[in-house]
Image (cartoon, rainbow, N blue to C red; front, side, top):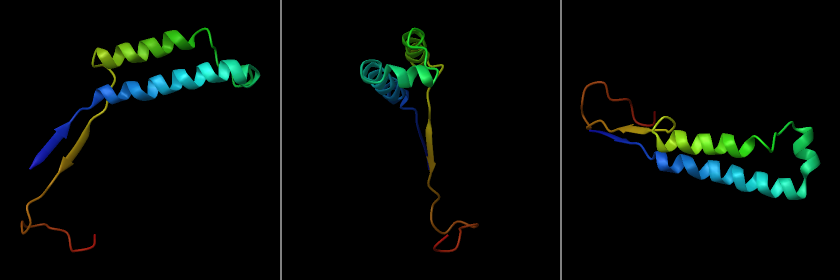
Length: 80
């Protein structure tokens, strides 16, 4: 049996977390962001583009799992 899922909506969660962290660092550590080369003016557009890519189905991920029926030729030995 093969099961495939594509929970692309979960890709937006890290994008939102990045935005929240950048907003916090903008207030608490602007010098660190500048030293790291973070362009705070460009960040919102980049994050919006990432969200749009997820919405459009361009950016996402998939989790594939497969289960083999027991006793079929080619089974791996126990513990491997």
